[in-house]
Image (cartoon, rainbow, N blue to C red; front, side, top):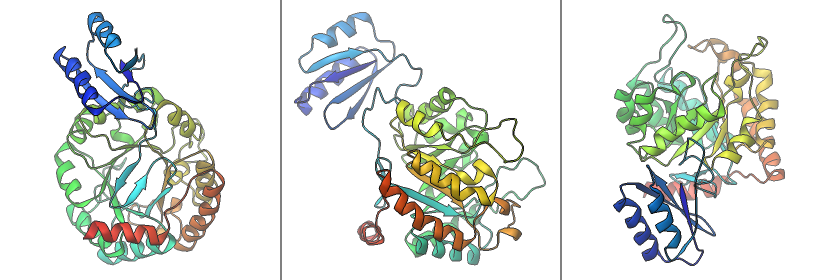
Length: 353
């Protein structure tokens, strides 16, 4: 349930309404928009409370949200959420590019790739230190050592870093080194992990489970939001269908649908979504045209010899650079923009100080 306030309501009056909600044994979540402030009421709101709120000065209306996810719903938060980390903005009209290898392999490898990501115009360095693999004998990542390597490369080249976290026990150590934590498709409904991620403020990129509905996806995000972490991004990374030509089927419709249902930024993963290098470029462009707030793309200097064996879906550095130039032009056409290198550098320098 939500209480929608008048546009001219004071901060003092909002606090008084929140106090009334909490006195009745419910939680209150305040979302300040450009025109209205929405106060979310979490819990079993008694009819007497609803009627009382409707009569309070400053309350325009009280509306029941029928969706099982409340905090992730656009009903609760009408304006787009924009997450800012060290000067990089994700969401709204901003277009963020996350690029890098499937896994961190060595200091030299991740440093060189970080340099190339930055030179191409990317803002975030991706790389796995812990790898959830389908087979137990596949390369599983190099662990905390990889986190350190990536953190150093990101700082050196002025990039944010994103890495996957697999268990609740590793959330704190991953958050110590990485700027964004990724939840992989196999962990979308690892509720212990989601609850733990709700206790920190580090942004989370939540990947859609390969057989998850939109409702299930948004309810997974709700676990993190309900725990107190508002910094969640949704990632469409392809779903499992009967088609075998591609690794997965990238659900482009998910981008505008999720943006209608939710205020959270939506990121597309054309690398895992297709599993084929030649399809990454067209699906990346299609994702931006569909309204994606960003892309996470695999790029490797020697993809044919990558330790994970996923090189077939990784772009070469020149392909990555070319794609970003074209995406900048496309973004202008659909109302999305890259922050200029100068803007990024100025904000990052401010953060360093």
